[in-house]
Length: 582
Image 1 (cartoon, rainbow, N blue to C red):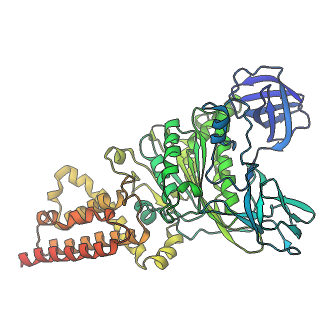
Image 2 (cartoon, rainbow, N blue to C red):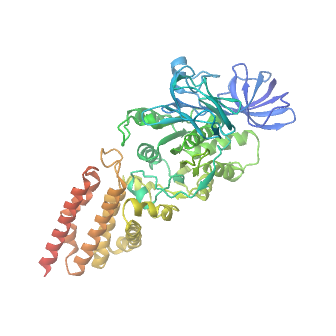
């Protein structure tokens, strides 16, 4: 047992700690606050404490636990709301009221609840880490697969019969070792897998600007940088609500309390679009707001990715939303300052880039452990909050070197009420060629060509804007004026999407393709018409333009009939104008 000799905010130094290990969890002070050893020097241990340290004084005790910071993984995780070190907030509120008392020690999972276990493996079989021993129907949407822990393998000597058991009950014996329904795993250690593959399957988000223009693949990494008010949080909420991942882990890391409150209030009311069940039946929330202890902010990211890897190992596709990695980096900076380490750029620690890379590299599309060769994935989407929207600051720049998708949020677009305010000229996706096969197989062969045409139109519009501002649009040739009309339709009718509209909030991939095809068909017809002498003023007054503007609001179940009518109307109206010129 050690004794505190110095306290500096969340950092505590204790002596008489010989024999301690790096990243070992300790209990600090009379109240037993949770801490983690982050530096050792002789018999001195430097500890980062995950709770408020005010009132702690030199001379108080520090007790070792002999284990690294770990979380418990088992039935009961889905639908939970945890803090950064996997303490269940609803349970703590039940016990302590609205304010968490220091030293709160509540089990992350209900140890007394019985789950209905159905055995899948047979006695006498040779099993290895990752093999499925049995299943528990955790929610209507998630079948929890009880796996052999990664470090265990051998002959299955005994397995429990079908029945109701707590997570503490032994349900199997493998190679002389007892297996329970839960595992304990250190959060800083990546869970093992057999092989990592290139991500090739689109993560369908239902957001047109993302899926069609800047797609992310399952197992990929994306960054959403943007200043205050540009829509980072709403964009991540949309991804959490509508992406076709089996499991969603949402980490509110250092964001404002009111933003996290909105998540906690909204999610339990939301319905899963495919099953009609509550969305919380496939979601885990980790709430670690800006007024909570700074050290726990750093741990919350690792807690989230470890839970995501656990469900990936069952063969699920998991989406992890981290909001925001800037606040996590600020926590690293504060702790680094307390440790008196040499600062890097803007005061961030010199190891900022490697820590970010370490986190994002835990994403991936993998063949999981076990004899069945199942595949699973963890997709990581990290929001970045650069001060003043300055993308040249260290967290944004280091994230861009790692993440393969860059969704650049634009303050000017946000001020114009264009949401999602993703700048189509600054954003990019390195998964375009990877997901091309998915689009061509599942939707249409000419998706890539249509996207290329649309991007070309938007880029040309940007080039023409300077001329338009100098001499006005009427000075442009008729063909270029027609292009500006199409670009306006692409911006306002396709790229803009209303997150709060019952229908427009989610757009299936097939509907996205058909909307883009119709707008480009409109471009082809009006370009041909103006070249035949039709005045651009008449094009601007076409009634079908209003129909194009409301395409996103046509119900997703019946959009094909509606789109056919729009296409027919478009052809007839433009043909009529061409006839009048003759």
